[in-house]
Structure formats: structure tokens, C-alpha cells
Length: 253
Image (cartoon, rainbow, N blue to C red; front, side, top):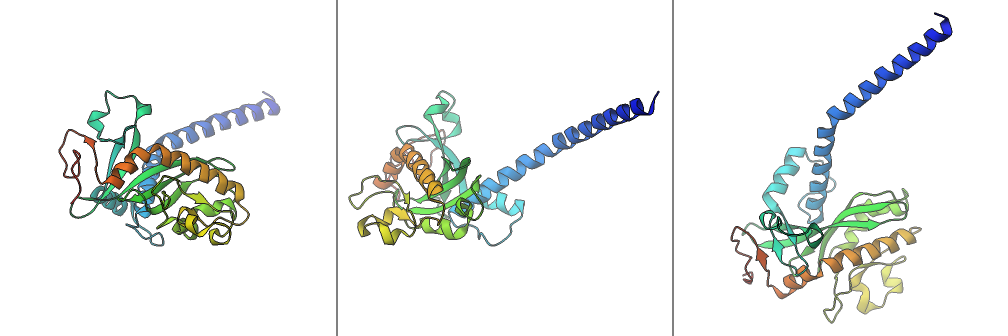
């Protein structure tokens, strides 16, 4: 066998071995990667309602414990009715939206969190938006995945930008739904005073990211509006196998 053929055989064998090793490693790491992704999402949900400090490092066990103690995942239908997993079997998936309820020590709803999936400039933006139990006031906003330009649109993942959402309103002064918008620059410089509660400061040099995120939030919040209306009215309708104190059209005390 010539040296050339030996070299080709060696290179081919090396490629096969490397491919097998990479495939094996990828397969073995998949459960760990999936767990890390879930932990990061739980962390962002907790950050959205200020249950953890964004500047402090937490172990996966701490995140899981805090999430389990405070957050409950349900679904809402097109009428804003909260539904548990057992009641979703006979319903079409496109009729349901996931919702996360944050409970206080008295088993009352302190806020609710909705997942955000919006178009960005270079790809999808994923995060969570939390609202207080009044159905009008934003409690927090986080982003856990995006493809925006670092230093420009990528600033959506920074705390200075996300803190702008806290305390803002998704309804007008007349209590009509208007969503939340991202201004082109500093909101107080270009937005009328009566609309300032519905705007957050934009990011310099990232106008398109702000526009896309604004449209995405408008779409998402409008889909959850039936549920938000029930929170505003303090009448929460549920369809669950287990009776809960805040369900069955009973007003929260």
C-alpha cells in the first residue's frame, strides 16, 4: 500500500473516530444541557418578579427550590379562564397559552408571568413579562435568549433596560388596553406626559430592535388580555380538578 493511500485511510479513520466521539459526547450531554436550559428559564421567571437578585449567583438547587415554592404553571384559554394540566387534554393546543402564577405566603396571587417570543432584528427574542395582580402594572421583564447586536440591540438583556419596565402600565388613563411601547430614545423627551406610563426608554442605535419588540409585546399582551381583564376585575375564573381559594369566580380577599 502506497504512502498516499495510507494517509487517506488514516485521515478517513480519524474522521470516523472523531465523529463517533463527538456524537457520543453530544448525546451524553443532552440531558445536562436540557436541565441547564430549564434552570435558566426558571431563573428568568424568578428575576421577572424580583424573587432573586440579578447580580448574585445561585446554584441550580437554589433556583429549583425558589421556583417550586413560589411559581405554579397553568394555562389560559381564549376567555381568560385559568386551566390546569388535567383540563387541557380535551382542548386544542392553539386554544391555550401558558401562564405562570407567583403566589405569596397566604396562597394569594401576587403576580402572573407570561412568556415572550418576539421578532428581533436578527432573530427571535425570548423572555418573560410579569404583571402585578391588578392586571395593569408591569412587575418585571427579562430576556434569556436573543440574536441582537452586542452593545446595540443586545442591550435588551441588561438590567438597566429591563428595569425601565417596572411600574409601567399596559392600559391608558381611561383603562383601555394599549400595551407597552419602547420609545425611540428617552421617552420623556418625545412622548406626551399622559402616555408616559405606557412607554419605556429606548436603546440608542437600536431603533429597529425596539420597534420589533414593541410589536411583539403588543401581540402577546393582546392574546393574554382576556386573562388580564379578569385580574383587573378581581374575578378569576378557573377550570381545575383541585379547588383553590382564588378560583371559581371568587374575589381575592
